[in-house]
Image (cartoon, rainbow, N blue to C red; front, top):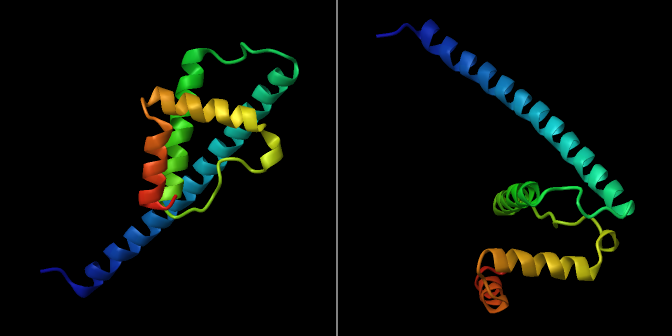
Length: 122
């Protein structure tokens, strides 16, 4: 049987550990967000220069997969964030090309997307 003093000390240590883990996670998130912003800016500069080869197909696929999963996790956790900050930053054609490519890569049809949206309300 443990003494009351020992029982009190353990939760305090766990609380300190939890605070340290949250602090580290916030720092990691800030660093990752800064890296992502720098990468986006570099890609936008390359596009402005007229380069279409700035990212290899493999790197593009890895980025898209990570971004799709990240967006899905954030939406499913209750964040009401849209994937684009403002409508004017990407053209409607760009959006349609990307949406079509995403559906094709998952072997999904627009009909299936519509059905899913009606079921989930998203």
